[in-house]
Image 1 (cartoon, rainbow, N blue to C red):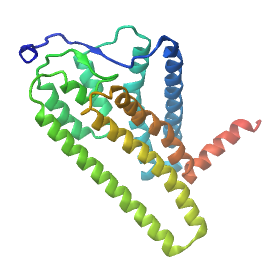
Image 2 (image 1 turned 90 degrees about the horizontal axis):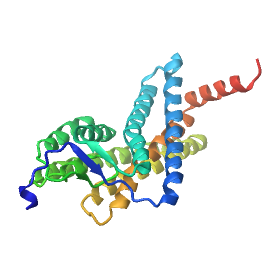
Image 3 (image 1 turned 90 degrees about the vertical axis):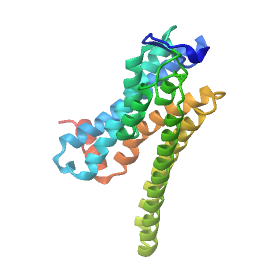
Image 4 (image 1 turned 30 degrees about the horizontal axis):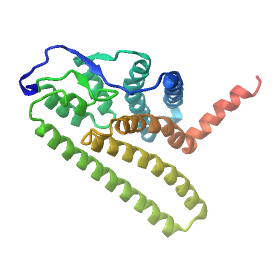
Length: 268
């Protein structure tokens, strides 16, 4: 019977996290602290690069792009997630859900998401419950009772392509760095490369595995909480660590930050 039903309402219910009353406010304030921390650090890096002409170089523009992506991805997710933690009823319109899904996935790749969201909104809906704590593309096409094989095939193909190219590029980069360090045999250079690469690799692995878990666990509905946590970690952890790893370990940025802090501490 479900296949013959069509839902015409634009109001969707979001499942969210099932949280005991004792943990509601601690979790809310933890997420609020995490959100303000990433706002402060990423906006700080943006303002620093924009205000300092000596930092108007391609590498620092890439840092700006990274901070903007982190801000967009988390601003789309966290405020509504915090509101839903406090709310007894969690509702969102279908259009808002589509926009949230697009903006959330733009965190990864915009051109891919334009096509994937387009494949999703063409489907009719027979359900009105988002089986997640947020709106993403997989949760959207689960609202339909139609055949979603095209969505699954395209989504999995692009995921494999994205993960393969990402891992290959990272492996090639680290191999080249290791080769240069081995050829030059410079102790200071080797220590600096090890320190930078180790922190970057840890961050990359967190992103890789949390993103991988999110995608895979959509195919295993028996683990909804783990999938939701993985998605939150995919957004929150890199957004908080990126300014530290790429900001504090880049000499020019670190020097500017230290210079500004000294000005504030030193009396005029």
